[in-house]
Image (tube, rainbow, N blue to C red; front, side, top):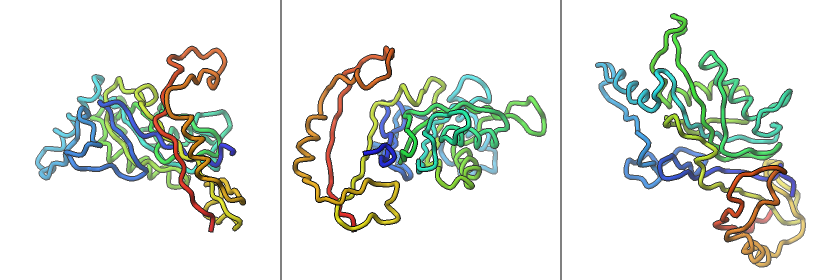
Length: 263
């Protein structure tokens, strides 16, 4: 099956960082197990007009020791059909290139974005998580550093600049400590490979979203084959030549299949 038929979703970080479980908004309840216990939550203050806005700004600033610079965790979803992958490449339309352009329009200066997962050309993502450092400066007083933006403002602004793209959206933004790294803090990644079986032609809405197999599939045999993937395995032969990263015996927690007929 070609890579363009896959959909990728980055889901979990270690206990001190946010966990993105779906393409939509996270559970907002304070006692939700999905909420990270050690990432400060910026509360909405009802009396903002009486000066509490400044207090909220100080809470955001406390996430980074450098005044005015804030690291944000950004979760994005995208349709990979028109992208040459997520990693930035010269003269190619990439997810990182589009995001960095949107951030530059927002803050008025170049930024560097780091993703938890690299996806190939044509691969979609339900929630690929990145981090970016943003310095907020005054547009009326050049050189003056201001308090960092609220995450909700960052999300709204970036999605505004992404509107014309039509195939990438920011689904969540959070303030994180300056030592957080989207790639190296990731604890788990989930990948979906969709195959639709049946003699009928693939629906127009499923093109570039699934691999169509005209024959009926033996789901029981496929599920049995998936069991060999579960456990701890040596993946050193799958990495690039010269890569020295350890460990190479990473665990795969689950692998399963669900049957859907193409209608």
